[in-house]
Image (cartoon, rainbow, N blue to C red; front, side, top):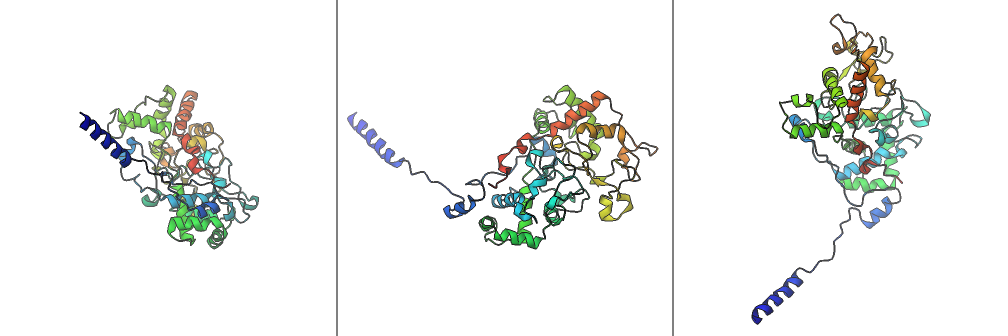
Length: 391
């Protein structure tokens, strides 16, 4: 018995030494020297955070469309700094974020944004948290950016905005030169690309990588659709038309109206619109040619991008010129205000070619507005990963 006791004691001592806790090892993404430079200008995480998004289960029926690789952390961080950097504008007062505010789903609350030297733009700033709701799908499906669809990728979009005299008024050579004189960029470019060299391709790719992380799939609509989907209430895509248990009676009424009257252009899940562009009857004789001003085609004159409705409750004012201040005004337009236009989309026409107003009741209009608010992703609007990194 004594031998057994001594053996157990010896084993415990051996195991105790074997399991001796090693000193804690702390991993640092930036060297102390790099951190010393960066911390003078920026508030960046000491170690990488996750930027990848988990897609809701119910979107499995679109497998392939939403697939995208996990974003490169170093490029995202670089892109975020570029996105918020006012040094990249002619008068050093404007950044991309000036017209794309996080709390507004990366939209602006002005009808048209104000750029360098107080210059007013010509169109409403599109919400960037709506643009990449489907990851990088814009780059592979033929969908385009800007109200007139003139850019095919976020890289093209950012380059055009940087150069626009009413926005940032910088040539890409000027942007690259400005990047090269800022002490923090050498460190960030080396992390992202292996060396500190900045050039046009790298600058725009990094901004694109950051913008692609702004996907928005944590709204009440997504939660309700996922719950309904997982409960087994599924018949192909028809489950999306069912009443959702997480919705109020009013929200479900609004959803029914939306699916019948709006989804034909905007899709059931408010991601990639079914129509790339259309005239929605805002004016009988519009002064802005829209898509037609780029293509030169008569059938496209006065037509504009059909936007995603993700976070629509955060992105007022609405339409390409910001003419509507509230969702109630938007709904009223479709209810009573659709005007004749030579290129008015067939979805908004009666059989005789006249404008088709929805003529909604007061309660129906209220229900539709209530439903549209279910697309709001409040988590994205206040996610600290996307905060302004500058001190």
